[in-house]
Image 1 (cartoon, rainbow over the protein chains, first blue to last red):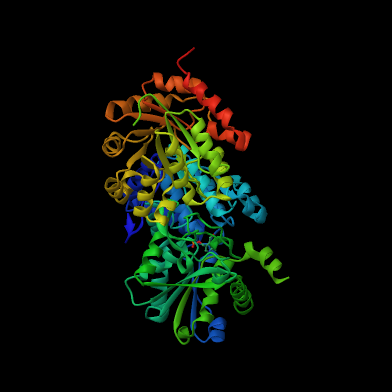
Image 2 (cartoon, rainbow over the protein chains, first blue to last red):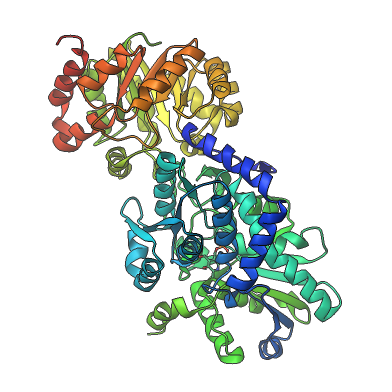
Length: 382
Length: 246
Ligand SMILES: Cc1ncc(COP(=O)(O)O)c(C=O)c1O
């Protein structure tokens, strides 16, 4: 239930029974052969797993290290999010739920949720901050095409955290029929564990692939951290190994500017969205608005397991700024013919900032593709 | 602490701390419940959300203590402090509970802190002398109800599934839940969330509740009349209290 002191289940009483129901169902199902077989089938034939571990030789030459990219960008929907949404939607079906709700920031998790819901014949409603709804018109349209009903959330800062608030409110009312398909390793127990387990397939594949390609484990693994699901997904199978693990947060306009989303680098302990973790908050415990060029990293908290891995020192957490991520976005496009998501570009940008990585073997989790970001990048380059 | 009590909820510092204090003194409730504004009130509907956002434009936590101190200079009635957990956690649990108690709050209700997570708060509260109130909901099983009955000064029974907010009707679920909770718990039971009219109050007292909490309906009056809502609130509370006269 906890990772050290972090995690927990800080929710209104009405949400305790649905969380207990979910925990029981997950325990029952996770080792069930039918469930595993069915999920494996959809991950392969629908989502496109396994994803390649690609040796990026041009970028490697440029940066003076051996760089492998875990190509989650090639998955259906264009990001790692589908690993989690297929699995949770299937879990919801096994639980007898007929309706799915989810939050989304940029729309990636919303799209992946809408896809899984369409596939399994579940009703789907996506909550999206009104500001994001305006900024991400194309993804809104994609979700609508996929049959989801999209609600623009007008409360608070009108962004991702408010979308989560609204999804929690919906769940408190409709839990009997509805599964809340949370999009990252955040929220009350058991969500952080469930999402971590479902995303760990990234790390499991990576381990097999790198052992085959290199004959040994990599020196370092680098991943971007919003809520932390793609990062924990690739880190988790390596936690007991002698591999440097580096999580990269969104430094926005710089930590000192106060306009960023780096809750591990610059936040403090708090209790929010059902979990004890690190948050960006005021002295009086009000949750702050955040800032990042990558909408998927624009969240004032982080999963509790990351908070634990930070405090134990097992994982290093760093911040990369908007402009650095933008440069890496362009560099990978030019050198390798791969347009990365702006989120993933944060992980790529870190490679250049760390001298000690030179000459080593590094795996970067390319969590998504950049098509969704073209408008933002075009605007930023003006 | 409660006995056929009408409990009125007011969000602190909406629209400012002086007004909140005046509303408290004017409203002839049996008990008052004061809400600490929070940036992300996940258990609240639109009325209280709006009030909190508005209050937060100038809110300081120390206002909470000021309000209770000033109120207790004039009135003896009990005060319940309602909050989300993070402002308390951030302030320092011990320091917060001590100051809350010293300033005049008699009980503490933390919306997003189920009893399983409340170990530290319970311990500190016991040392300090402040009471704790926990929520129960219609889907709370008997085992949890028994645990809540042990720890809670009274049971705050949430009337339905969902969040706070004005509702037109009291659902069947409320009466079923009240009946079951009464059969399990020894402590008094107050029903809250969505209770908005004199008729609702009458129905819930008649069903055997020891307390009824009215919140969002009062917040709407403040929204409409602002700083000069005093008389309207007084009138509304009088109307609610006269639920027995036909
Ligand atoms: C491509 C991509 N990478 C990363 C993230 C950040 O989420 P997480 O930290 O949970 O992996 C997102 C979120 O939308 C995303 O779309």
